Picture (tube, rainbow, N blue to C red):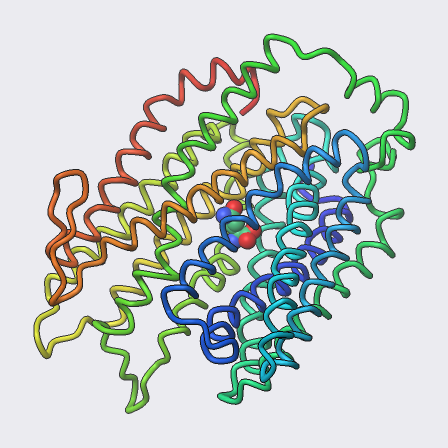
Length: 456
Ligand code: GLN
């Protein structure tokens, strides 16, 4: 079995790295910008932030459909990239006029709208292209998506450091430079992609991939026009079921930005040699862990495949959910030590993020790969949109769940008849939720495999 990867993978890696740099660079500043430059209140900021991060993952459904039917992946990526860059520059304009809210606010909403639309065209299509570089059932796909995932995390690691440092200086006039840099990152992604696409975006036979309908080869068109069979319907059903389970993963995982940040802020001993580690720095742990461990996972899957020992994709994903549950269990146990005047050692949170990142590596790149392997050619990008739909639902659900975070002096919230009186209760909610989802997924693997018809 061949273990090296085609050049196209590295092109997609670089493009997605710059696009995610742009997206996460913006996201690192967004809430702060709303609060300190646009003078929105906390509640409104939180609500808008939640709607934005949810909508960003809803539009891939439309972007996937447009690519499959009309534009192909390449054009959709370029148009989506252009819209996102324009959106970032609208935010740059908004930040430039922050003292005149009647100008700043329309630019702000226009900018967010463009990013939402642009991401819809970009994200599912770049993700679909990764798999098209290989023959349909090539065993290297899981490893390829894991390497691609490193690109995502390389971008999301540097983004807050660079855009955050330039934009969040304490002077609201500087936010615009963060957005400007994010927009420029997006332009770099488009330049790289536009320049190298012809050379590197080819299938194993050398045919160009991601083309619009009129430029597809005869075989490609035939494959896309083939009527759907029972097998296709079965496989699409599996995509639906898996996407459902994944909602619980992201809803718990995304607590990183909300409840886990409150927790780190209030109950974690962040003193290190007389210096206090900023709460926001804990957000860097996840991309670092993914970057360090992704190559190990990629090799590990290929090694297991060579020995015919590779677990089925739903098994890997179920394992991902269990790892997430284990991470929350660590923190649920840790918080028992928290008492008035006693804070928890950082090691607990670091261990939790490590487990969460290992879980993510078992679930997220594997899920992208599985969707690619299961999709009939006709709907390859649309179904990638379905996969991202679960992230949209999860972001919304994550916000609701974070609302159960117990606060002293406030009435005890009640989750399905279960009082959430302590932090331990709150984190146990996620332990149980992800454990049940993971266990159910593991138990249904055999059933799902029957409907996958040979796809692993
Ligand atoms: N962090 C990853 C990304 O931005 C995962 C997104 C997701 O599917 N929830 O691509």
